[in-house]
Length: 116
Length: 238
Image (cartoon, rainbow over all chains, first blue to last red; front, top):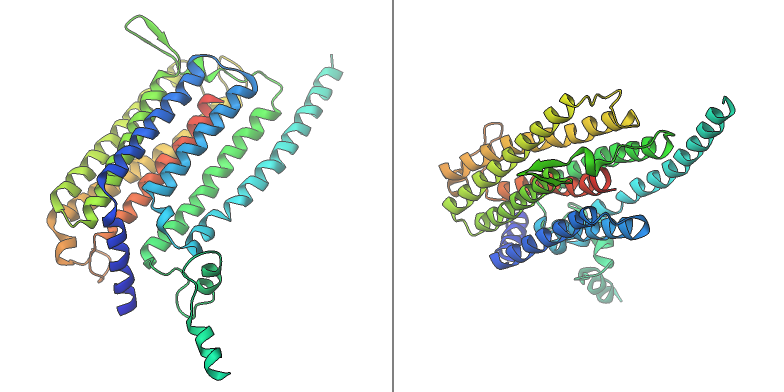
């Protein structure tokens, strides 16, 4: 119990130490990055440029929210890895389904065009 | 030799990958500096990440494998405002509203740890209002699309899966925001009543209320914003 209370107090001091300014700066960056993502659509960018910009702004926004707003940057690595490593399973699933969807499209195109 | 052994045992690494080994091999707690409430919220959020991850993967699979053209989200979600045709404008405003609510939430957590009751409660209420605004705009968007003939089984512009993916993904996200607004109002009430200053136990528990509840609430709310970042990128912009 005393250990829990002590670690909680230590954590509170760490969180307390952040000035409000930090959150306002991150907030501002999230606004700017969202505006940039919107402009990608507004200016009708296409192809690789569009997709790479969308992904870049998305990852920067997600990183800022998780690291600063959710305080992940100040957590111990044991918690950080316990949360972030399993997300690799989603990426593996994504890769598998991308291959599968590609194959499904191929068979659909072959099937539907054969009937005509 | 015996003293060298104990010295080695008691010297724990302060940083780096070695802390993961010592934390996970600890005899009592793997997540030090983290209360059970916070650890459980993180684990819940990880499970929710899998839920939304599989939704978005399902959407990707449907969109990649359909032989029909996919409706152009930029035009589907466009609005006429004061005679100007603005693509995707409602979604952009919803994004800014949700990001603003995340900003006020982060500040509420910060004031909570400073044990400033009134600013914490006020910022929580502002966060809840922004969240309710987001849900309201989403209701408007759903109404508009339904009146234009979008259904889970079809729509006037192309691949039928567009409607099912849209209602499924934004519906689940909107539900999360709605639950978050209710959760925010409950926590705001506890803060303003001074529950966390006097350690008043919660309704379902004998444990003393602490300002950490505001931070745990914040984790959930930031996660809702985080999910929207991915929905915005993959469903609306892609």
